[in-house]
Length: 235
Image (cartoon, rainbow, N blue to C red; front, side, top):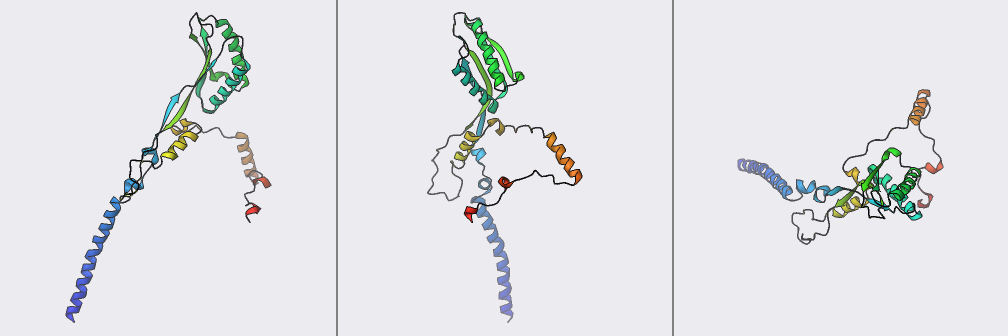
């Protein structure tokens, strides 16, 4: 009887010793299989997007006047500037060339086009540039600063996809996503510094406060087009 009790005690002690050993082995296995480095994988580190400054330019012929084609090109250039431009829109006029006088007449048309396109006068910088006296076709150069996003190239197939005992991320993981983000972001400068918050609508804020003080509903009135109900087709 005493021997049976001793055997049970020995088994209990052995179990208590084995359990921590098994737990430590399990934790050691996790350290080499899906460890911290793999669990915290971030494609922005393995496939970073670099944001680089760029200066697009538009040359406008300074001949008889601003042509229809040049005006259309300038308007499209201004639209791109308003969407992704940073800083002032620079308009450089030739100085010292044989067409300087004509260029000044074209500059007046350029100025009018910029005003009609909604570019504030304080956002335009007019400056001369030195041109050769023999140059009869020195253009008016319009330029601005923008940012472009460039992602790392994909296509590294050096890893073995058939044998990966550590279950580590492949070299291409996240590369396509990063390239898509670089191609689709509206303004790459947002990847560096977030935009400044725009001013609030003072009129709307005053209306909400007035309704709140009267105990009225402050939410905007909604109609049937704003309903979030599911389509009847799916029912």
